[in-house]
Image (tube, rainbow, N blue to C red; front, side, top):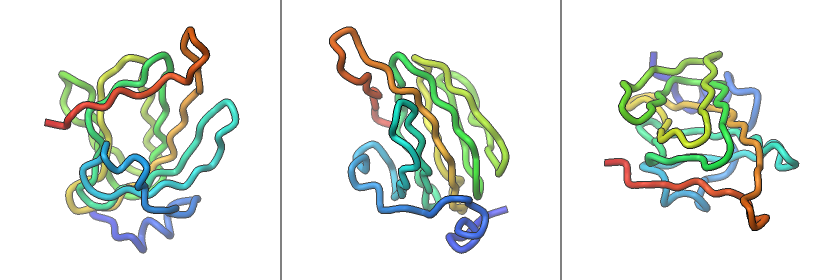
Length: 134
């Protein structure tokens, strides 16, 4: 099934948020970001327009959990086939795993992403390493 923006607004427990301009260069298509928590554990709601996905990337030093809250999308780890995600699905992404996630071609998609903030040896927050998608 393909979901519209109105469907997403009804399904998601969180607002759509603002256009994700701060990270737009790491996405193909438009996404929207609604910060939920930034104290020790970073939690945000991310909404993807149809066909929007982020580039291949790695979270260094920390894992990530995706909670699928609305619509339909995909997740793929490097070297494995993409897996479809639907409302209620949960994905754990271990540290150092190259991956991407985003909406199905004809459907909006919403996730709550949970990341644990960790510092590198110099006390700076670890960063994601984004690479070109293809």
